[in-house]
Image (tube, rainbow, N blue to C red; front, side, top):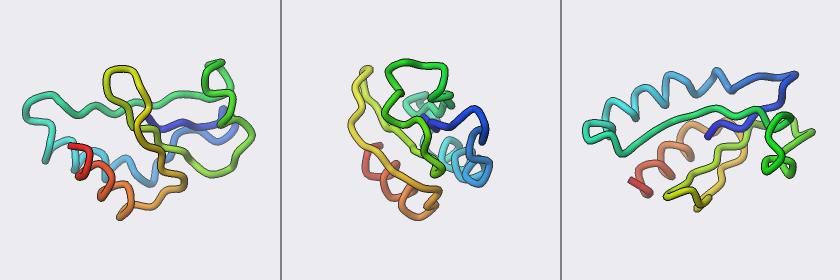
Length: 83
């Protein structure tokens, strides 16, 4: 989940990376990407008022990993490890 602020919007810098990874790993529909506005979801309150993007990784509704910042190599590594 790409968690963003209303005033900043989702992180456009990693959209192409997510599309590439979805194509590589998404053949059996196990990998999903989403965006969420921290200002409008109460459970995302800890991520409000931050200027860096935050990426949450979850399985069965539970957050299992967090990556802070638009770091393409780190995001790729984390997604590859989790898949």
